[in-house]
Length: 86
Image (cartoon, rainbow, N blue to C red):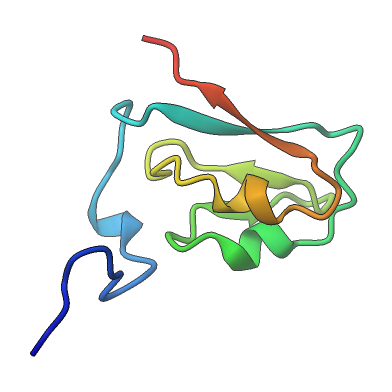
């Protein structure tokens, strides 16, 4: 008996499925507030957040699904989910 509804069978598959601009919300990082802890990089189920050379998180919007886990788990509250522009 397999439960498929609401389950991520294979997390981190974003590279196989570009999101483009269909998402409703997109994460934005406040560089002044961010503590560069890297939790958002670890928590992203699609692996769409990486750290730049300075340790600042960078979101790849071609693959981000806009799920908001990064914003929800950010201990510094440096990530906000903003309405996607049409």
